[in-house]
Image (cartoon, rainbow, N blue to C red):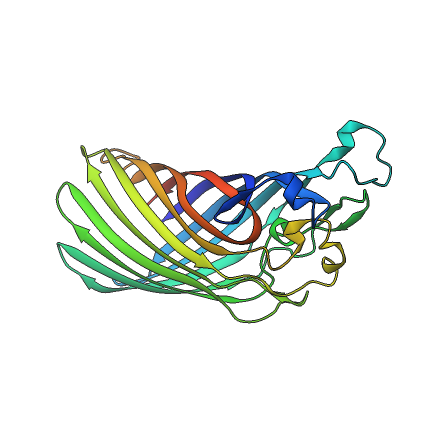
Length: 298
């Protein structure tokens, strides 16, 4: 199977825990506030069925991050002489971490399927991205603007799928377990996620799905000495302002090509919105996500 998908995640405004926090309150401790952030991933995947039960998969991505920052207007910035200097934009782009998986069918019956997988995340994404800081100088970009984690991680998962002629459902649990600190001196938080879904097939070529997801991400352990001196400037340069508890709901539509030269070609679009966020410290609040992909099996 060959697959390409595009994921866009948008954040806007800030929260501290479950409560919204405005810029003036953030300026009590920091010189800047994240106004909006967009995270985009172009994901490429190849999967090969070694046997009927065992499959191997490799995935890589090109990541693009963009963050708009508001500056405390009372701060005298280096070189700032007009009103436009109270805002700034930081962008990074490049290859993300590479993921390798092995998936095995524990059970494969007409009405049910159980899959277990174990993956390894290889730190091919850069953790040395730079950009302009709030003082108008170039420095290392904050943690969320980096393109990878910088360390190996294990990716265990288990999935149950129930199958019927016109509909299916399932649940899945998966995790990202970091193995230790990276070369910059910090370790990204572990992630634990559970999701459940229901899909209904209207015809041979179209189906719709509903999915709910909940998870927890830990804070960053340690810190990058190249970022730490600027932690007072930007909340996202503080390793304590990461992770938390979240839950989201997703609606999707899927198209299949059942016959012809493009048989087994699949197109899918999924839109998601959060319905609960309890964030660790001050962070941009997720607003929505949209993922679109194409998959060809042969």
